Length: 130
Image (cartoon, rainbow, N blue to C red; front, side, top):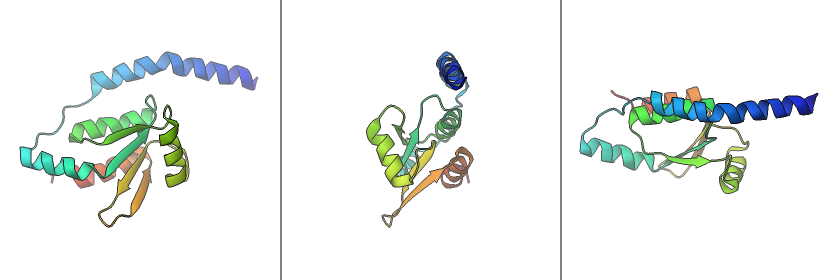
């Protein structure tokens, strides 16, 4: 019975993946507009961020939409398809759970922020409109 359920959900994921990706493309909002100087400053700040994600994870899609809405250039690391990113997530964050935002602070300390709502709140607080 377990085997049947496992294959059922794998098949369901395979069928829904393209639908989810198309829906993401169609519903991604326009980025906020900033002056060239402001955008350059935001881009510099984003160099210290990386998002570990799975391509078709609904929570990762939610975070990617917020990144697009805020006009951020954050490095996207696929922990599902890239074993190096998966290992880095396991070793650094302590668990292979996505989405996870890797934040390198100015003092060199590293923070691993899990949960889509927490990541979106952090991004909105740091980069959202004043």
